[in-house]
Length: 310
Length: 250
Image (cartoon, rainbow over all chains, first blue to last red; front, side, top):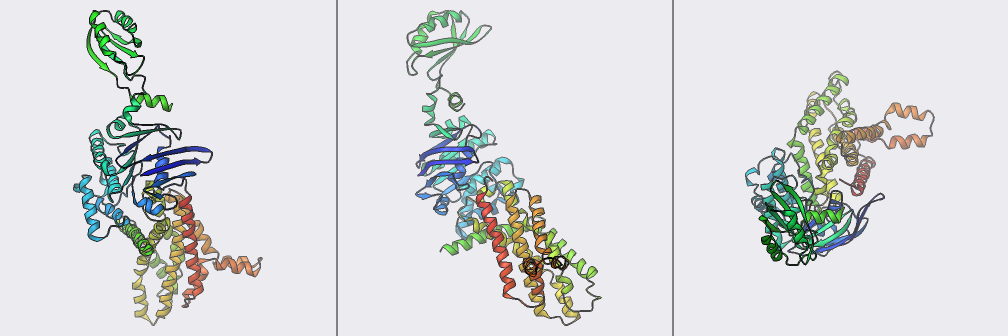
């Protein structure tokens, strides 16, 4: 378990991280979400022992990162932002160096390196110098370094930043695959990623935690959650909207955009879990419009994100 | 247990840094320039052959001045490069202490300079062939030169931790090293002794790399000189550690 206790960091008079506390258990993938400069990287740097906190601490598997720094760091795999690597080493030498630092010797060392190369799909480039590799490969090399010693805790700072969609997909698969045996904290500002990978999301803004919940629950905080969107063809959409607005349980209904024959309409419920769809469909069949598209909104993370961080 | 762990950690860092020099052109450029400069000064400025003396005084006297420019160049990348590339974030979150990292880097660079120094051996052979040099004194001078190189290097690695720019590190290191040389440079001592009390002159010249090097060069490996160089190195590495631990960001 990683336990973050009242972590705070001040740079001069500016507070970068302000009293952040949370726990991550094994099996969880915690998404750390926030606008740029919200304090994500600073928090991660404090958890990994790279910079000392102004106050508070992080306890990693029972070891305090401040007082028992070395045993705590042994349990962590860390992928820093921008995936730094030594450009003039070959992939193999680089990982062998990391393995040696992590206490692997002789045969154990080569085995650990070979296994990791395979896991991260790097076997083909292992004799190449890192500066001849593309950004995606470098990211993977640094990722390989983080999982080399099969750590119990993984801290990943924007693990998919700068990758193409295929590479992002690969990295996400690797993360998900490892999740059962590890506690993983990953930071991102990509909301889809949150949805695709994380079991829990913490949103931070100006150094403070503003939300801590499962991504699905976060979505329900959206104004859009439970709203019904329709695309109507022909007929008189204004009349339909006026009628829909009078349905019991509907808070409001409006035309979002109108173009030639087609109109986009959205109907908002009073309570998010009211079952409105049936009554709306009945009203629709009574009107002279035909629907080409009906959709019940789940809520959007980006909208929730914008609302609570701005 | 803890000490063997420390040793292996230091060794891992040393190995990486040491082969890092040879992985790029830096090592070869450095060695070639070092040998060429030393050869030039020894043969053309000190007139090694015309002196008619089978000692290497005309060779060793140039070491401080060549070290002044070349060693900061060897040291400048040690931390500045890590900071610039962000790899410092990896190395400082590995399960090793700052001191292990610093010692590992220092030893790698020192060993590298040691190799460059060892490659000057043909000169010893030449002197031994031509005459009957005092091999004991030559050995002492090599030890002294190597210790002095360590002191220069410790200044360089310290300034490297100040900044992410190798050039800035290089220049600051030269300025500090120049001070350490000039404090014992005879013209400076002479100028100083004209007006300041004797204890101050002694203190200033005692602080100099040059004074201690010259005393070793005479063929006497005095413990005091060794202690001097070791304490300079320890002090500079200590400052290095404090700077690295107190940096605010990468």
